[in-house]
Amino acid sequence: MTWGWIALAAAAGLSATPAAAQEVRTLGKLLLTGGVTTVEGSAGGGLATWAVVTGYETREGIGANAHATLVELPDYQFRAHGAAVGLYDRVELSYTRQAFDTRGTGAKLGLGKGFTFRQEVVGAKLRVLGDAIYNQDTWVPQVAVGVQYKNADKAAVIGLLGGQDDDGVDVYVAATKVLLAESLVLNGTLRATKANQTGLLGFGGPGADDYTVQFEGSAGMLLSKRLLVGAEYRSKPNKLGLQEDDWFDVFAAYAVNKNFSVTAAYADLGTVATFKGQRGLYLSLQAGF
Amino acid sequence: MLKALIIAAAFAGAPENPSPTYPNEEAVEPYVQSNANAGASPFADKAMWAAFGGRAGVDRIVDDLVDRSIADPRISEIFKAHDLVRLRRTLKEQFCYILNGGCEYTGRDMKTTHRDLGVQNADFNALVEHLQAAMDREKIPFRVQNRFLAKLAPMQRTTVER
Ligand code: HEM
Image (cartoon, rainbow over all chains, first blue to last red; front, side):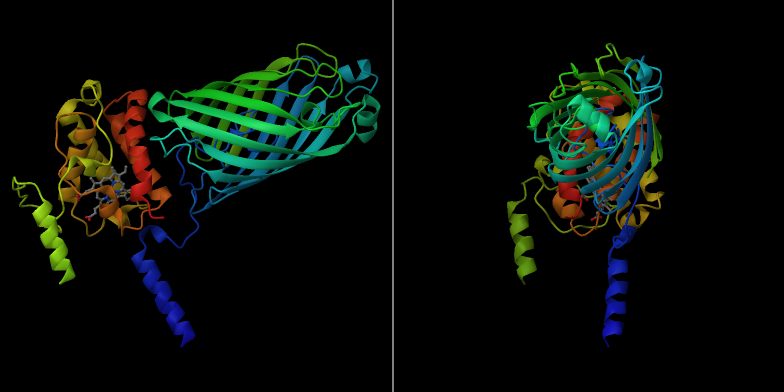
């Protein structure tokens, strides 16, 4: 009897719900509205995390992305790659590995040529209110909260530099709004962090083991369904006393389709580990659904 | 009985002028006609109507939007067994009203119309994609398209089921 009822209910459910409401659906979002992948693996711009959830899923489905990112700087090379899943346009889980290659500079810093700082970033983001795109009749943005657990690998060097820890947790709240009538995308994020150079150089510094609140802002203009151009700013703490600078970039994110996007940027990371003027090309490829 | 009362009440509240009849359309339950049913306020100036190519342009966009939607396997089921003659007419009125083309919207409100259709966010976005394609075909500039879409976007709350 029970099975009969279940079968009947299921059949009724299927026939009463076109577009297969029972199914987990994919690719339901509009182009570019899942953002691209940041250097820390969460959905956002390039340097700044946004309130959007990765992937092209809507609240009826799931999505996922893999990314590979390269930043060519005068004295260093930064690389990141990882993957993220978006669940029901509500929750985002991400894992990214970052590498900061000192190349020839490593020798000048006394670390050895090609010395590479690495870290893993595990992130979780929860969308808590609003909708960046639909709610065009209010100013209320889409808001998400998130955490990023970061674990850097060069504990000994971090210790020598004065860093307090080789792992740490960032907590952030992000607000994203698309002003569709103006074709604008705006984002502001507050991040409580102790991280030096996002954590690659550890967490905290001599006499500076407190969390400080940093700001990430992005403003972009949609030039077509596929193309968003804009600029970003990210403030940074300076806990090691190595003149850590705020970051800037100008970027163009292009969605080839819902499975593939390319982000190119010119990023200014300022002074990194005493080497000034670290500006260069940022390139990120993202594939997913 | 209750239904008859509701219908009677709806008739009593309806405006004086008898609404025109549309011989090719199926009858719908009586409702109170109002431009407020369109679900968005119209643009103040005439620029949008002109940019959309006036009546002819909007009619082509709506027909193309409906044609694309009923041909799209993601959402075609939802439109089956519905009066597409009426849908095309009321959509044209609604777009014309919002774009300040001087039309009255004579259709039903968005919430009532879409209540039992089971529309999901992915379906809403699929429809938006078809509207974008239809506007592209009419060479409506992207930024102008977005100004119009900004009026429609909040209707996600009334057309998509919770
Ligand atoms: C901004 C979004 C939308 C607008 C402006 C809109 C507009 C309209 C209008 C004006 C009507 C006719 C009202 C009347 O008969 O009095 C209608 C009916 C209908 N709409 Fe939508 N709609 C939207 C979203 C959707 C979506 C996403 C779907 C499905 C994918 C959909 C499917 C239908 C169907 C099947 C009907 C016919 C209902 C019936 O015959 O009772 N609509 N819509």
